[in-house]
Length: 201
Image 1 (cartoon, helix red, strand yellow):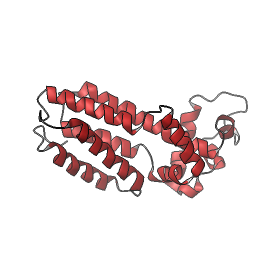
Image 2 (tube, one colour; image 1 turned 60 degrees about the horizontal axis):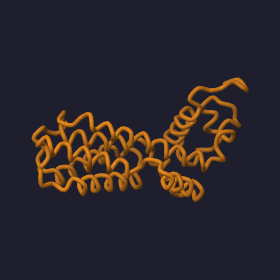
Image 3 (cartoon, one colour; image 1 turned 60 degrees about the vertical axis):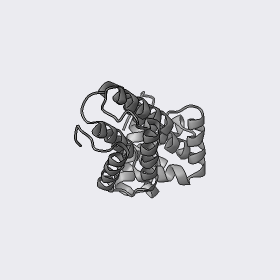
């Protein structure tokens, strides 16, 4: 255990990762402040020293993972003209789905204080689905310029449809359904974009 009074590098991420392990191993009901700090090998008061309580902690975990996904989506700009358009988009969709355990999403939705803090974070500008949608739209427009997406395609609507589907899957899927999510996003992209001349990954 980390000694009292000694700074812990990357404490937020250490606690977030510990929470994800607890939920994946023991379920949502097992997520308590004590369980998180025990898993993170920290003093039992560390979580409450940095967060107002468990609800704020859960909300900040969700906001952090959405921000990571939004940052990942921005990376599509560097992949224009490379690989498969469908494959590039599906990678982003699946990364978002895998960024949060379904049980963590459930906690953030069903605990009123956590849900409120999450909404406040989004209203304050925390990156989420709208930022991801913007990155997807910009990527698809760039691929149109390269001739790899139909010039008549409504890329803003395609991005909205993909993000909306991922949002639905993220909020409703059960643990262990990654294969189903992969199939669903692949079928959706085939409908939205048509045959992919670069092939699926």
